[in-house]
Image 1 (cartoon, helix red, strand yellow):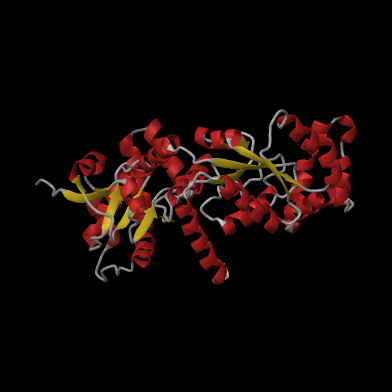
Image 2: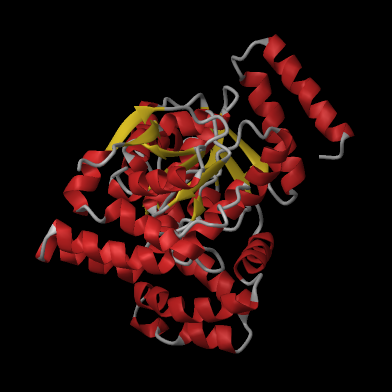
Length: 405
């Protein structure tokens, strides 16, 4: 007797981004999710990292059917906890009489070929939906949607093409982006570029593009200390989210190298950094040392991270520095250590990289609040945006100030 076909409603990745669903569920393993995921997605993995690796190995080394059987076995073991988690997220109640294991058996007992033939895609919408996705929108997410719809969760739909479709859209969005007129904060290490940029973001939130925040890295050899660097893919997801939020006709960012930690800046972003109008920030040595101490030693755990990474800088400085930097850290000579690094490593490196660069204006950054206000005024005086646009922005800024934001 022939088996009935099962409708699997599908939506496109961009639909999910443009019109967010009620719930968005990432079915991939925790490791895959950590590397990157759709905005607002919740990870409810069907397989953990080890299970996913085993199933993938079976697919390659044995057969698709062998991989399918292993996935089926794992799913039977986890289906009750998995369904309970989905039900809680979706605000839905699993039918009391449902035999979930039997449901998995019934859905999958024909094997991989039969199941693929039975799952029939149909177009759907995201409004009010509970959307699921896996890596490429294949059997994993479609089977989950079919299973849940059988149980009565009619809002269940899948993303056509899965995460891979979203990733393609993300890369295309970045490639097609053309940055607005850009102004780049530059200056020696420790002048407080990040402090000024974040104060500027409070005054003109639509202007700021904080690449270091998106990357979880300060863009230097020690730039990961106390932070959580992200993958290239997650950085690009965050970048697209910021672009979609709008930059208000002006883009203000920090001067960076082409790489922020392990992140390679996409071409349109690098163009904004490299060719934007350069604004110099200045501060005396004592202020720069204070800024760096506050930044790099804000957490007790940061000291151990620095001790682990300082030997690399010792090798860059030369043989006579072996053990010196670590010894200074261990003997609580942090200020002297920072001053030494500025004099012998960071300042020479920065001056070499900036050779020949011209600054349109210079600002003292001892007080980031004052510096940010002066930069805003400078940009607004020279901006080509219309007076009406600036009037509207001023009104918004005044309302934010009255509200204490």
